[in-house]
Amino acid sequence: MDTFFANLKVWSKRKHRLLGKYLPPFSAKVGSWAKLIYCIDGFAGPAKYEDGSAGSPLMMAQLADKAASWRRPVSLRLFNVEDNPEHYKSLKHVTQPWETNGVVINRQGQFGELVPTILSIVSDNPALFFIDPYGPTYVLFSHLLPILRRQQRATELIINFDADGLRRIADTMHARTVTERAVKASKTNIENVTEIIGSDKWQEPFKEGNLPTQERERMLLRIYMENIEKYDYTVTAYAIRKTVKDSPKYFLVYCTRHPDGIVLMSNFIREEEDNLLEESTTDAHQPKLSDEFNVLGQEIIWRRRELSDLLLEFLKQHTLTTRRSIRKYFSFERFGDFSDKDYNAVVKDFISANKLLPRHGKKQINDDEPLTFVG
Image 1 (tube, rainbow, N blue to C red):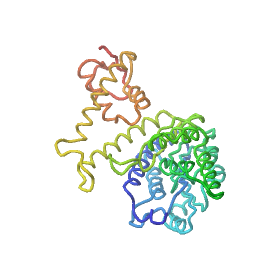
Image 2: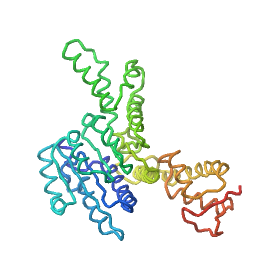
Image 3: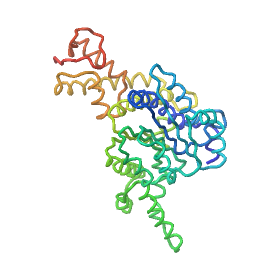
Image 4: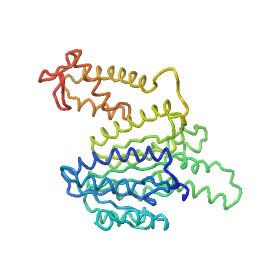
């Protein structure tokens, strides 16, 4: 775990980039009606990597400063949890200015044990929980339950779900156990997986032993997401990976009760996927997909053609709509597939072709301008 914080890994950059993109609009949206918003970092680490890169606690502290200076200021409070003594010492040092002025609260201990303390301090204020453990076994579903059951609907979670690591533990049910100790260890592993994902639905399919590795991992993820959804959350997952060709390092599971959150995150994930494609053709250290054409440019052309076809079918059922309604519909139906720029470009094409008529008759529209489909 100590070597993890030597430098900021590629996959961690992606994770932090998504968090950094999402937090400002989330804070601005919720801050328009809430006096105080809490951001909880359940596995904060030392706040800064050895190479000088900012960790999530420092990122969020810097965002709190910016939010306080917005034209409509937003008050963010940060609650950091870290168990490792050395990392906690660094966390305290790096965030000391914010802790002094009351923006940051630091607590040493295990996240699961501190959840009651966190919730008592957060009270009924809106909160975003960033739960990024160092492995698959640190967060049990029972730790999440008090958070998921909060009455405050502006409660969101971004969880690092290590499907690969958890699948490896689950696979030990097939180990050739010949000693009492080995049998006990296998039983413990099975119980742990069940406690982590929140049910034993995974056990029967795993016992059959005929599912491919990726399907086993996806099954664990799917059951985990389904168990969170029971608490009135919309849940999505994004595969964090080093390059576009690599298998997922882990999944970021995003949980929200507000449709605007899905729309925002869908756009940011599409942008992140575009970054992956661009890196694959421009970064000398990454394998190139092709030298013959612009991969990202072709991807944008293809997906906008697809969106045009999908939009045509949508408009046959929704002859009066808005660009916001279009974006919201497809953000749920095709999460992460299209960006805001895609929606803007395709809707603009439909207006130019006189297939969509703005009520005011102008070509330039905002998201809420009524649009009439004329075929």
